[in-house]
Length: 116
Image (spheres, rainbow, N blue to C red):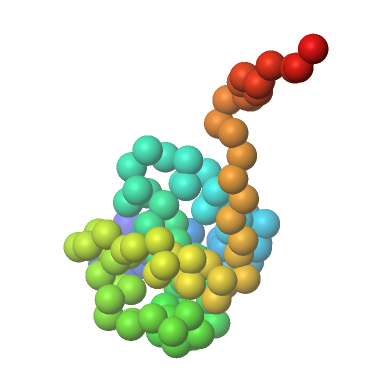
């Protein structure tokens, strides 16, 4: 049996980016699920994978979003936390919208009392 060379393996990020490139619905699902994780770096890693799945990769998305490429790279690798403006601009460049919903399946009823 031939020993595998280091180049025979792909990273998780490479596999995820390929899956996202081939299946846009999976890409959105993956991003949404990672956004629900309490650790922000999980979402940032999924966003990085999605950027690498785009034509032109991170460079092209950074240009389209109007953000600094090196700053975006640092933000997505966890060396610093990006601000909401950066994340929102990147998501807009990807044509991804954000939707908020109540985390509790039974949201609390309004506390306003009806006037008699």
